[in-house]
Length: 171
Image (cartoon, rainbow, N blue to C red; front, top):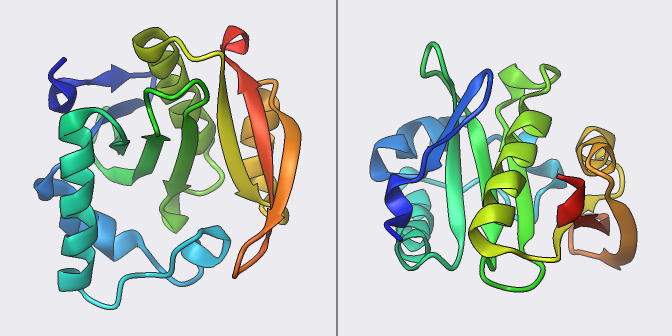
């Protein structure tokens, strides 16, 4: 499969694999307050971010780890990123971040559900993993809206987290 040619369309969103043309908009949206519930901190420079996204291009090319750009389908405006990590495993991991200006519009839920549905068809996993900071209630509601159940918890360097299991049949 040509992974870079994937396009997932929803009612409001167009979701495609990350490309170098998306780098500036993604970098601009990665703020300290956005990443408070993420495993990483904002990259200190565009050059540092380039090392990150170049690795994404490599894993997109081999289909092992897919980072998607979320854009508004009518305007093309950058909204955020979604991920399908360890894509070929029995329980791939879903991830999402939405730019702060777009919080509260349901874009995260719409994007995660669309990526999960696509991933269920492309890879046939039994379930998806969805790790999230315990205190990130909006993100937790995404997993719960998809039938996710907490199956584990762990402490990271930044926060306490829970891991949801979302059965593929719920999609």
